[in-house]
Length: 254
Image (cartoon, rainbow, N blue to C red; front, side, top):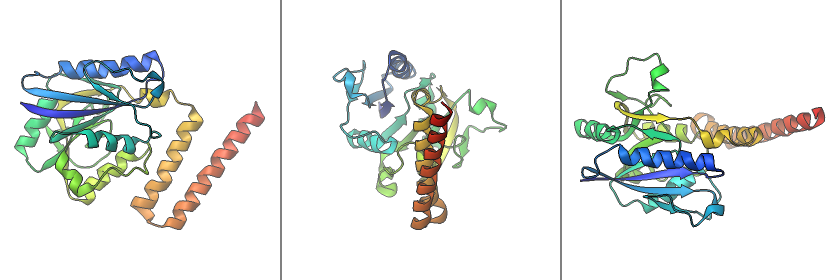
């Protein structure tokens, strides 16, 4: 039997979002023969107001720390005891045999250490003729930050997820970390998982989203593009002033 630790990040602010998380868990459990593949599911729940609620067939953890996408992935990884870890959003529909397809690809190429599924909605709209195994590091194409499976051993090479990425550009940071360390990543076409599209984030206020984007982009440019701390501070100030101006204009118009 193959064990896969599943780490699901959830923010259950309302009943609708709770149902999305439950759908993710239920489709996951139906997707594979439990005698062949065992999923050990850990939900990292951001809303501590619903504690001690436990999602069915999971262990549900309520961190005391303030949410950060990479921070919560690191918490999940620390609780992992299996050789394979899959990090997931809570807005997914798993299709039959998705994990088997990833494992088959890994068996075909043992150097593959990070594998991502195929989304029938997103990938189906792309102008690519996908092979079964699609190597590379293109965000959304070869690497899908909403669901990716790794060999736990690569954490010894990459280190923990960079917790300065709180949400936006976290996927870019990890795919570039894999590329920098010359670790093989691929999207597997027959591993089908539908991503319903950031249901939790879309429920946040627009101004909060903008702050997450700008802060993430400033640090992304510092780490992966210009490597200049002075420019990083300048970008942060520039984006902060821009946000303040937009908020002031909205209040004045109202």
